[in-house]
Image 1 (cartoon, helix red, strand yellow):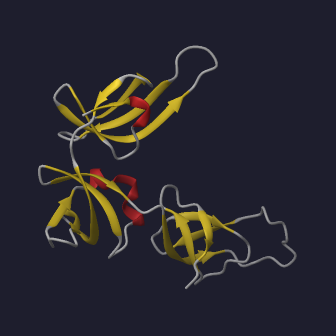
Image 2 (image 1 turned 60 degrees about the vertical axis):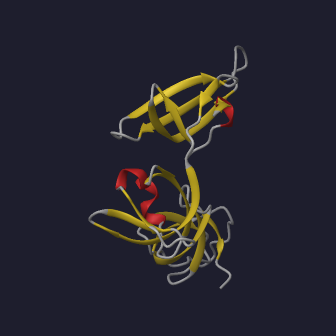
Length: 188
């Protein structure tokens, strides 16, 4: 199915020269002069080679037909990351290069969108936000009232982030899974 390049997003799968590529990063660039372009960073599914391409935003790109289904993350072992389809209870093992830098944000029982092509997991989209516990941070300094002063913290998944001064060790917080940025204190 052909789609315009500007509609492609991270996690989409495109076909080029008979090979499938998963999009790792997509950016629409609108220069002051000239035609707008879409910059795509992709990974070839067959061998993991990364490719960078530029298309005019109106150019047609062949989008591969893949099944995007909700799956539940089960566990990680030597074979990779294991997910289960909650409707059919079928399990799919996904390699570490497909999960990539999203691995620390996976939690047991987390619902994710998994793109499956011919029974093989090829792309993964996590929920935008997830809840983690702060396991290490600096103590609050008395008189530190500036709302823009954030302090470093380490989360239960090992990710380093910055949090407001009132957040202490043991506090559960909501973070963005894209970059680990603090959103708010968890409401539980």
